[in-house]
Image (cartoon, rainbow, N blue to C red; front, side):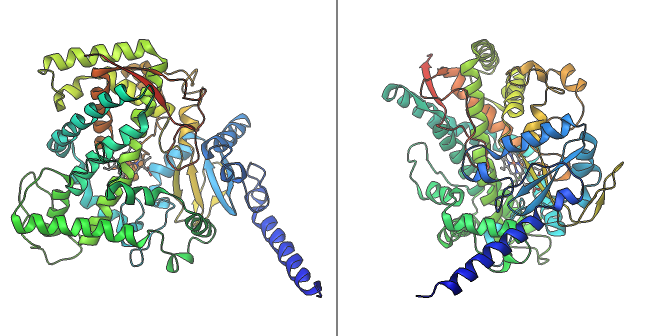
Length: 512
Ligand code: HEM
């Protein structure tokens, strides 16, 4: 067989790919921007794709190099996509806050027609995002958090039972697994209005389909890679949310809405607030808005699909981030027994004043708990890099570089929060960094675990609240220490939310 022709095609394709790659990878060089040396096809993602190091570590390398040169920004390549990485705090302030109109959107996939569940707050862009954000903001006020507080506390009964059970059965407890089941129960209850009971039944459909969304199958990875390279044209051809996942969550929301409207059921949760938005276009502190849609102007209300997408993002954005925060807090406490003892003392003495009950007021009285949670989020921000896209050309002050519309921007939160200039001895877990005096002595934009500016995390209050309640519930009952199954020093595993390679395994000693 004559192989000349296929060989010619193959070698021409490889040569063209090489030339295209070289051209793509000249982007930062041409603009004289310091960057990490890209590798054919991968750009700067070779080690992260091979699960050798976490993306945030690779980004921290760039951050340190740029700072060492006294630069304000650097360049990165996610495959062929050039990412702009700001390092200077004033520049970051401009991007996230002052000049927000140039950087309003996240770098994420949205396709409301093909993937209705993708039409949620995190993904939506421009005016659609703005309109939805202003509708949803009133559902996250401190008043609304107080209203839902008891639902969070109710889920601690299951948490305490499962901890007791685990202690008797296992010598080492996979703490992230248990805490994730706790936060799934909480979010299932407040966002979807149903009892998931994943603490008792970890294999429920709700959990199974949620996991399917997080799992990056080979085909999903390919789709994401294509989306990273051709973000604009590909959205019309790709469906990322599997059909069974979509049907499950949309039907769940439809059934709940129908049931509540038919039977006039009022429950103090996000689902009720979303029903109010659908029916009356506003949220109130009572049962109002349960009877079927009273507003006719579609722009004011929400459709059932839109409700499902928001409940879905509260689940996706809310359960793992909070479970991760609690896990890292317990990991640190297991290695810093003085901090653990001090925190338990505070928890016990405050609870004593509140009839030994975890109340909203008790949680807000716990100042040291606040510091421990803040220090955990500094050292291990679950979302370690903040993605944005420039939507209007942006001239950088004191520089001749213009960030072009369409350029991806990555804010290296974790590198800033581990920068010894702002946090001396950054590896040390020291909650006193968050005393009032220390906070006020640090420059702005040096602590951003929830992002910053108008697009900051909408669920911040809820995330902190469920993290504090979970920690309170564990620590009032148990002393934690590190089990030898935990690999230390820890390494971050591959994934969009920070996790620990090999898991966090703790010994739990029951105190009561
Ligand atoms: C400790 C827990 C949490 C952490 C660390 C966290 C972190 C973040 C971060 C970094 C962002 C991006 C912000 C930006 O671009 O500036 C974000 C956005 C978001 N988070 Fe959270 N989050 C947490 C809990 C929650 C919870 C409990 C919910 C919902 C109940 C939630 C819902 C959202 C939503 C909907 C967005 C998108 C906001 C928008 O684009 O307007 N998060 N979160």
